Every structure is written in structure tokens, then in C-alpha cells.
Length: 283
Length: 283
Image 1 (tube, rainbow over the protein chains, first blue to last red):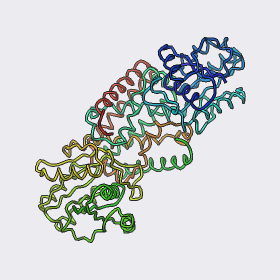
Image 2: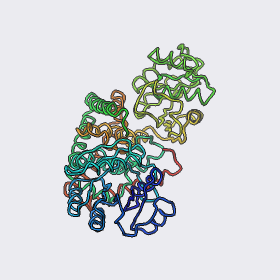
Image 3: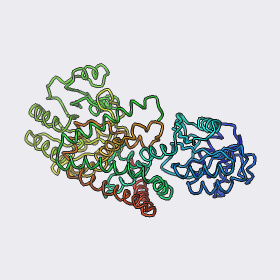
Image 4: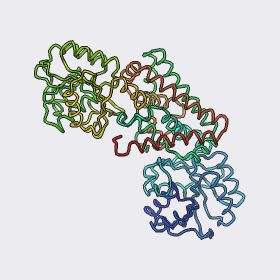
């Protein structure tokens, strides 16, 4: 297949490198930064830079922020062959995916979104890696009228670049679960570093502190936009977490060790069940 | 040296295994569970089980919960030689360490606490490992009247079993910082798993969810006691975190993307500075 990857940042760059390492597909790349395009060519992460001739493209993987993804799709939609499949890797689907779906229908094209559950605390092409997706979960979010071959093609590509488990779900279920598994974690990490004691932690911490704060370096432009686009789901999760934290807080304020122990035990049992559910599953 | 390790759980078992793997000291062990003692002997994690003759012991490392640590120290204090150094590995120091210090002074003994910043999400001897402390931070909390040779002995032993960085601090500073770097992380992890979406996360998560929830399996008996004993410090950190989370929450509720972006940026800058401070440091 001729695969056109738009946006050679952490995810797009990793998609290209994985395609080149693990498949024989032809990889055409494009990035707004010409230096990145040149570097990608010189490192053989892509076969060629896009010449804006899209007629022979079989699959377009747009690896941009949601707004730029839509804009790009609108820009190239009438230049694509009707056989082309279009996907994106955005961290939210919801209304954004509906608008993408509408553009596709208007141009007799097939669009279905993907969300690879892989990332790093640092972004950009320079941090991309052919093995970023190894053993990762991939979520594919088709619509009721999506064609089976489109979903199969996206599954195959996902497996080829490293996916271990693929979940097929709706765009709204995706957003609801992602609010908890990913977005909430990013907010917690960001809030966690805002204690004056942070300056003294060096030498006083083990793995727990690192785990809590690893992703606090997230890019504020991308994530604030993702959060706003998933406002209702994320608000629910944040309110629930604050309420739960307040229960530990109040037990502690009351010096109620039994209550505190019982709250911790509830958490332990939930996590142990979660671990049982995940046995044999990736991540 | 003859080193007596009391309590062969995750930490005590790991101390024994590390001493046997990396040093030539004689390791005498004791555990309330006779099966664990037998297993430790058969695996050569200890040289012998304690016969309750403590006259030839040079160093006692008590690896029990704080209350049991005090009780054990009281029990053996008048059987120890005055050359013996006593330490513990409890996660809080504060008043507990002052009481231990008092027992030591009354028996003409030398006590100084240690806190190795290493652990696992699962406890017990079966999960202990000779390499648990490799590259870990160790905190040593002497008193104003602690003797230099005692601190030096504890530093040497810490390095011998794997410490990369050793911090010497007061018991109160230890408790203040630990409330943030360790205890708060445990509460967040425990609260994080209490969303109904937890049941659906399988296949929808990446590293962030795992990082957030890894330590939710903590033992409720030990941790609720540690939390209560560090009540003031931990309450301060919890209140601050809840307040910070509420700021993200309110920005989201107001659909204020600029405010959200600015909150995330503050976090990113703090974490980036934290990473800079840690370059070349363990953990």
C-alpha cells in the first residue's frame, strides 16, 4: 500500500518508523517543518516527501491535533481516490470524529479513527521510535455505516506496527473511557507537581513519585484542547476523584484510622480485581 | 559484622538477600512466621535463625511496622551489647523515632533510623529481592547527639546493599518530604481506582493509567498507620492537591481553555525544572 502519514511528530514519526521497520508499505510523509521532512528522508523513516499528488494513496494516517486534522482532511479530500481510507490518531473522537465522518461522506471517502494507547512524556519527531507501539492497545472507532474492509485494513495496519490488543468501540464510549484512563491521569500528574515540597524531593523519592509525575511535562496546547473537547466526561471523572480524595482527607483529619484503612482496602481490592482482569492482556 | 535482621517481609527479606549477595557480613534473621524463617535459611538469605542470644550482635535492622518495631526494641534492649547499633526502616520517623531514641538512651545504646526509598506493589518475603535497593535513595535521620561512627556505619551498610544516594536529614524534615513524595502518591493511587470506568479500562489504557494505579494494592494496615502518624504533613499535601485539582476542574467547567493551558504549562515548567535538578541523581 501507499501510506501517507501527515504530521511527523512523536506519533506520526513513530508510525512512519514502524511502517518502515516492520512492513513493506511505501511511506509518504509530510510535516509543516521542512527540516523534519528532510531528517525523516535521511533517516529512511519515509520513502518520500509528499508531492501533493494524492491519487495513488491507499491509506492516509493524519497525525495532527484535532483541529489541524479536520483542516487537512478538508484540504485533501477532493484530491484523494475513492479507494483511499482515511484515519487519524487523535486522543478524542466524539464530535470531531462525526465532523470527519461527514467530510468523508461528502467526498465518497471512508474515514474511521484510531487511537493508539502509546506515548511518551516528550514529544516531537526526535523522540519518535519504531517501537513506540510495541504491545500497545489500539482503539478503533467505526460508525454504524463503516465498511468491514476499512476496519479490517486499520486492524491489520495496527497489528503490523506493534498493536497487541485492538478494541473496537464507539466514538462516545472511547471518549468516556479515555477521560479516565488517560486524561485524568495527565491532570493528576500536572497538579501533583504543584507542592512547594517538590523542590526538596531529590533524594527523598522512589518509584511512586516518578510514576505520579512522569507525564506532567505534557504539551499544554494539545492537552488543553483535548480536555475541552471531552469536557463532560473529564469533569465527571475529576469530580469523582476529588470526592474520593476528600474521603481519605476527612478520615485523616478525623484521625479515623479504621476508616482510612477501610478506604485503602477498598482501593486494594479494586486494583487486585483489575489486575486479575488484565492477566494475559497488554498494559 | 553480625547483623540481626528482624522481620523478613519485603524489606527485611530484601535486606538479608542483599547482605548475603553483596557483603561478607553474618546475617541472623528472625520472623514471626516460622515457615518464612525456614525458607530464608534454605535459600541462604540468612546464615542462621536468631537464638535470642544478642550479645554478639553489631547491628540490628528492625524491619517491622512502627509499633512492633518499638515493642521489639524494648524487648531486646537490655540483652544487646552497648557496642550494638540499632536501626529501623519505618516509613515515618517523627515521634516514633524520638521514642526509639529514648529507649536507646535508657539502655546506653545507639539508635538512628533509616528509610530506604524502595518498595514494590506486593509485599512479603516471597517478593523480596537482593536487588530491591539497587540505585535507591536512602534517608538517614540522626539526632543531634548521634555519634558520627553510627551514621558512618549506617551509610556504609546502605551503600553495600545498593544505595546510590544517601540523604542525612532530621526526623521531622523526613516526615514532611515523605508525605509528599510517597504517602500522597499512595492515596492518589488508591483513590484513582474508585471510578466505575475502571471495569472498562482493559484495552483502553497505556502507561499513564498503570503508573497512576500501580501502588493501589498497598497493605491497608501498614499504610493507614503510617498516614495517621504523619497526619499534619499529609493533610497539608492532600489539601493542596485537592485545591490544585479543583483549579483544573473549575477551568474545565468554565470551558476556559486558556486557563487550562496555563495551569498545564505551570505544571510542565515545574516538572522540567525538577528533571533538570535531578540530572545525574538516582530516581
